[in-house]
Length: 313
Image 1 (tube, rainbow, N blue to C red):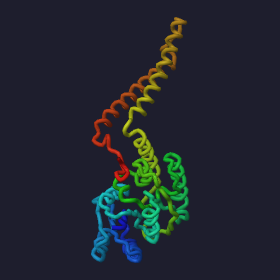
Image 2: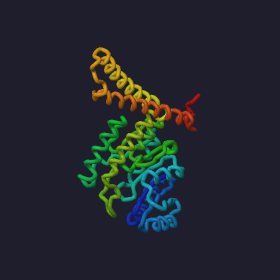
Image 3: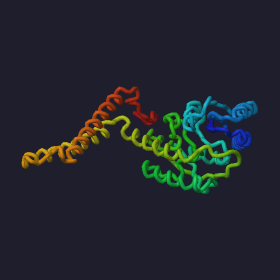
Image 4: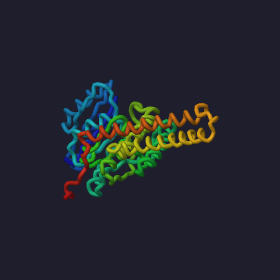
């Protein structure tokens, strides 16, 4: 199978018939073998009924239904387990992503040997205050922290090699950081393509300001796990040891001062309580790293690595 298209959606019953017809037209005109997996993320409208009708007309369209809303990351993760195509393309269901971009994305992955190609909505038709400006800030922070220089991490229109989506777990708000997850999994050939962005035709946006707070927390999680997931002692142990030593040196200074001047009241000095607190925090951080190391070393996937078997010896 050439292409698997994954479409997470919630309450998009109005746009699905037009979207499915458009995708079918593009696939047939390019003679692609394909499947389309629509994931209904707890819709309260007629979205599932429309998906069933589309499937009856074209068996290439399949559906997965959540009984409640779990979020876009969960929808993508479940669909990624099922896909069979050589190239996986994700897109939104609101008609703001154009299916006409699919052939060019497919070619960049198949013939230019990219592991992942992210769309770039250079010209956007979203609200400037609630989407465009926050999005620019979000992308700038993500570029700086991840070292991946994409203009639009959150673009729903992306293309992947099959092995990429099979090697990553997407959860929380991690769908925004799939390029980062792919990089940490060893897939460093990440490209970008300018894509058409269209004004929303039906419905309303499903995302609010809270997505940026959650997204930043998830980015911090990804960066930490990527660097220290298998070696937590190197982070907590180093930080704990440094904290303990700082507190210990302050304590030595106070004790030395007391020896020189017997009238020097250690317990009346704020530095005494600061040193004590820092030493306790350092001990706790060290123990956290020690416990984390025990958990990591006993994990089932402790020595699981992404290996290119074609080139391995």
